[in-house]
Image (tube, rainbow, N blue to C red):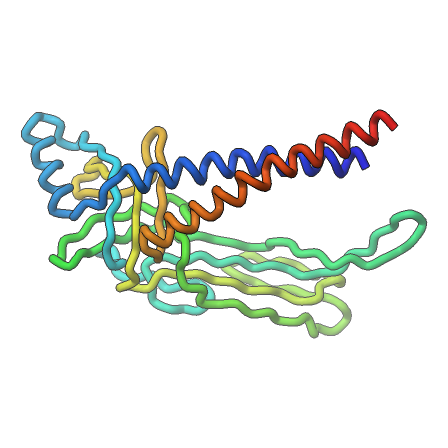
Length: 258
C-alpha cells in the first residue's frame, strides 16, 4: 500500500510542475500582443539603424497561414501527402507472458519502434502576403491534422513478424499482435498561431524557440481556444494536485505506521 501512496505522491508532484507550466504559458499568451509581420519588420529596421544588425530578438505572437519553404513542400512519410511539417509514430502491440503470485498471465503491451518529426523550417504568410520563417525545433504543434491512424494485425506465418521503415528493420517478434501507425501533418494554407522569439540571426525574420527562457507554442488553433484550454487545465490541476498529494501521503504514512 505504501508503494501505491508514493506513486500517487509522485504523480501529484509531476502535476504541480505541469500546473506551473500551464499557468506560465497562459500568462505568456495574455502578456504578448499579436504582432503583424510588418510591425516586426519595422522593429527590426530600427534595430538595424541602431547598429544591431543580426542581433534583433523579441518575444512575439504571430497568426498566419502555413507556407512552404523556398525549397518546396515536404512529403509526409506514411500518407505521402504534401505538407510543410509532419510527424509519425509506429507502435508494436504485443503480448508478454508474466509470472505473478505463482500465476502465469499474458499482458498486452505497446512499444514505440519508430518515430520521426520533420526538422525543416517553413513560414507563415499573412493577408498582405508578408512572410516570417518558422523554425519548428522538434516542437509538436497542437491541434494539427492527424492524417494516418490505422492498425495492421499480424497475420504472418510461423509467429514471426517484421517491417521496414526508413531503412530500419524491426525484426521478428513472435508475440506481436499487430502494428499501429500514426501520422500528423500541417498542410499548406493551414491557419496557425505561433508564440516564440523572433530573430534575424540568419537574415530574414524567423520565429522559433527562445534562446534563453520563454515559451514556444505552435498550434492550428486560435489564441482564444488555447487560453480556454489552459485555463480549464489549470483549474483542474489546482484541485487535483493537492487532493492527490494528501491522499498519497496518507496512504504511505498509514501503511508505515500500521
